[in-house]
Length: 317
Image 1 (cartoon, one colour):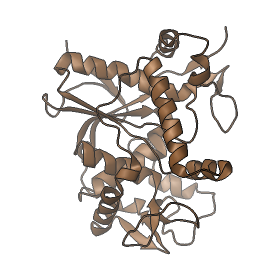
Image 2: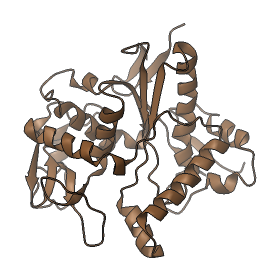
Image 3: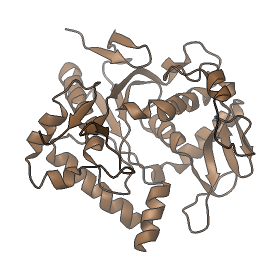
Image 4: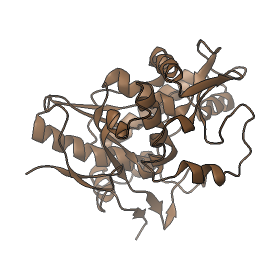
């Protein structure tokens, strides 16, 4: 029986056919390691662990390559290190280890590949340069920005219209931007922040370029399935597509999205007593703490107790 999945891009169920049955590729956005993961962060790895196990059963354990990245370059990491007065590497090592421990206790199989942003600066810089060379990005005041107007189908994944987004823009726009929705590929680092050399000056990458560069460097393009939480559809995954496609000169191709990922899958939000769980709101539950009270199998079952695309409410009832 063929595997049928709901493709976010096409907004319908599609029979899954890998590009190569001997090399099935899957990428899922992983943790930003500045703090303990909350239970909502645990839903994607648990959901996609089920998918990976199914793919391995269907195609063979050695025929599936599953990558889940680790974001170890981020403002929140810098802030945490500054607050504690410790090296950034101490923060990232601490919370990556905690994340992996939590995932192990939830019976989440480790990915085949766990690319780190800090190990991929050359690939990131190379992809940014390729995007510039194809006329889809520009340098300004030490920044490199993606020109969203250069990509004809920008907004297709999320169902957004670029003209409507521009017309509805209300936030103050940086003066070096051509368009309010142009997004950062590279930016200058502030004093005491990590930085790496680049043709545009020392700095660090924007969030979105990290994933598209790591995907290409580790899996090649196009990949078969890209997964993540529904909150990543826009802007993160929308921008990933734009970068990955435009780096190879496909900005004007009607079916350019297929040049990056052939299928897109997203799991629904996890709420706490009816409200979205968020560290910024302070309404979070940590698997790290829950696992002291409940077996990992119980928490895993709870995370899989609703359809993966639907919201799941966590409550004590």
